Image 1 (spheres, rainbow, N blue to C red):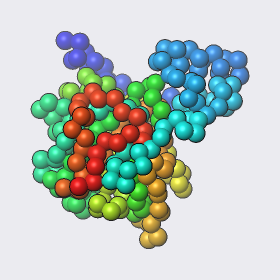
Image 2: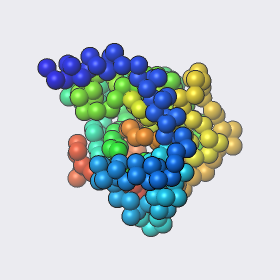
Image 3: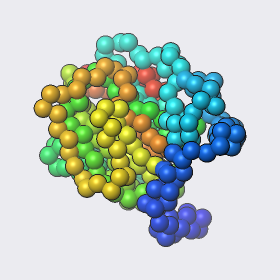
Image 4: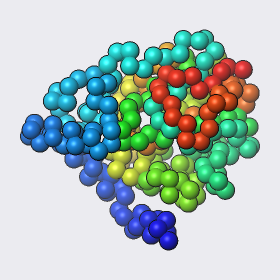
Length: 280
């Protein structure tokens, strides 16, 4: 009964407009005293470890800056094993495993397709029968997204969509949620083939912003693909994107390209730079 009430409310809410308003408020200048207090209350409410933040609270110009804060150097050591694939974010594993044809599991009995997730049959073709991992970022987490392994950025896909929450109730009940919501996908060419890093938006996510060229979601643009004739080289652990408010990141790997760590399962907690798999 509670789940149905929640889903009905989400259907009725103007989710896109709400996300726009939240995004503007996060970036709005406010009196420094109020600003510091609001961040302190948020940090206490969600158990944010502010000691890891790159700067003291009072040095962040607005709430968006604090939410998408960088960390102090050395806070997230990146696994140096040449065969290691690392987590791109701090978060919790939602689902992981092998794809069934082009389908990834969202929750028990629910699936979403790679072509719909990436907005392209052609872009998803290389992931047929591959593997995936879905990572959920809570409000307390560090919200920058990093490269799981060394490679070259060959494409950026922006796919506009809805703004459903990624709350567990919605994930367990809303069909193909991740392939419906607004998202930004970075395609990396790596030593094991293509790797897709997909940032999925949600209710109250202001924007998703890339670390180069400042591609951003939720700006009223139509779907597009940015192809790099001269690919952008990135190192393992290098920043790719950031969330202004948090959501979900999905990684797609080609078939037999890597093996996910056997110790990982749904609800496993991971940190950016932590080994999540090994090159086959």
